[in-house]
Length: 207
Image 1 (spheres, rainbow, N blue to C red):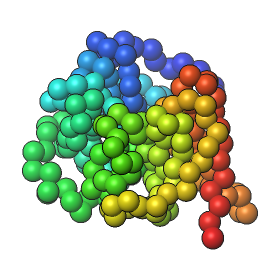
Image 2: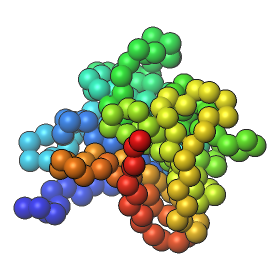
Image 3: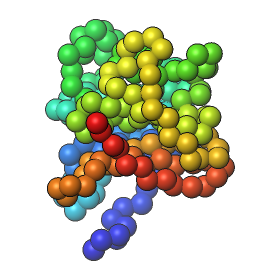
Image 4: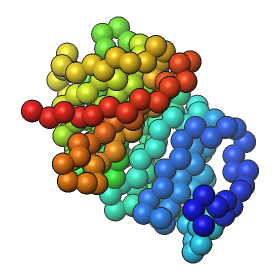
């Protein structure tokens, strides 16, 4: 039934910081123990661990599967962006070999297509969350200044302009883009605040 717990398991040695699922077949769980735990998703929602990615030197922050599910990218608190082969759960050290890979989502604050999302003078912790719209035309960020920003995607021009959404009174901890499922309904962005404990839904208005 909807909302029924099908499995409960202690997966990691630290608290879980990110979770990503690929097409009801793979589950990646990032933890503050610096590891990513990879699971096969079986019938009935059951899971079976098939790998552990343990090359990061700090806590896991963001993860994304490729569109075909063959690869995973992950970032950590030490500002590492690492790539993984999901067939054998081994690290891919030649990052350039994946330059043409299409990603199923992009939530990483690091990488070529989001290199200019950082405001002048920002450190590596000021931008907390990133999400690309389903049509791959815009990217939304949430930062420590309480702002939700919308850029044209990819963001590769220094000083790239952004539309700023102001509504949070504290840092923005996460943002996600939601594709409209009904005709005439605009796409939405959902942002989550930190100390203000608020959730805001934004409309994306396109010219």
